[in-house]
Length: 401
Image (cartoon, rainbow, N blue to C red; front, side):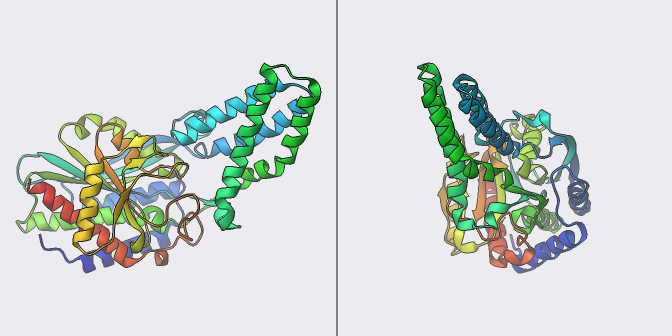
């Protein structure tokens, strides 16, 4: 399988740059995001054996909506405590915690109905093998972009402290208000708790401004990964036409919408395509935030560590990386760092992993992550080249089984 990865990398960068210049930021479910999906579809429609668009509903703003709900509930609860209404305060805070757990920790659609429903679009391209399909592998990215995270622009080194501090104070006030309510302590204690909680108001209220209204250019997070998938399919098509196609492995490229809205596009894709994805062994090579080659790793868990990914497949990808001389490791996702599209497909049995190439924990992220600086210049060309070398090597290994 002879592939010119330098040429493939250049085509990936050229198309990504052109799409960003033409379309700009792409909020999930927006006209811009749909236009980007159309462009990716048109590219794949030229050479894929099959192409398809999938429309789905996405409630823009819902995924991060829990943050402002927590802030509002906290302010009201402080007032209730000062009025000696510990039961109401603890009840309201508990509801806030449950919303946070289900909406963010577990990526459920708990409060989606409160937000306007828009139309998101996933796009898929397929290259069939020469013989019987015995397995299939998906390479994926997402074309929607994130809202700017203000905390990554203003005092980024305090990101973890500001977020965890606000959530910690919220949970702490809930715990004490619940204890005071259950044991019916004297009103003076409830009043003092209210005063103490009011002192934490500034830390909790700042969470209201966590995310801005504007979206990022979204080059590394994550349009370049979607384009990488498209260009990989173009290469597989050329190989097939030259008589060097895959024998028994179907290859698919998917670009998801709504990843930044809690993986809604991947959720819709897994739900609609469940039968097909379970018909033969299916692998997912998802790529997200491929900025820095030195920070490459493959995930073994997802969605705040609540979903197990395929550790064997992740190790296979990491082993392939080392074959080319790249340092790569496998590791679980850190709690409170979110999730990737791989998590939704893993739920239905797909052998999935996500390749990432950036610092990824609560104390450090890439400096451009979720900021206006997420331009094409922030992505290392060597990372994209490595990502495709690994993918093609893994596909070849699977096809030879």
